Length: 182
Image (tube, rainbow, N blue to C red):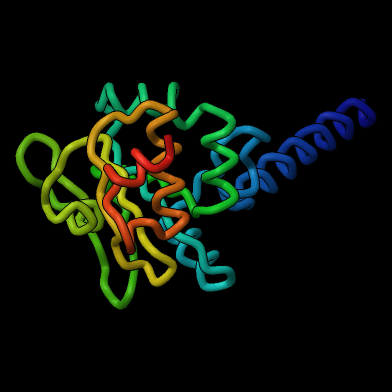
């Protein structure tokens, strides 16, 4: 009787430790090879303090059909995921999340508005032009480079990533970069 109780307690404790350890790891460490290592906003900002990279923020909502298509057809491509993981801190930001975010001396909150409401950080990053999906690219100083709105196929998204990562936006338009890249 004691052996079976001890065994049950041991199994429970082992499972608890396994779950607790996996939950304590940042999102960036739990992604599988070939998948995007998604960061929270706070994790990306902290990581950027240690090693500066550009930040790519995927602003989405749970009800957005095109956001789900982008997850399945663009972010799921291993070349996109590898490029993002190497050159950016990829962040998923729910435009309707209710948790406050502290950043740069400000607290960004969820604001009840209309049927759903909006998170102030998403609103700020998109200059109040709320449409989903929206990708916001930020430089290493967390200053906005550009906003890309709507669904983007993997091949076109890779071109955008290369345009941003290579700082080509500083010297030419995206249209010119696409022509030169062909």
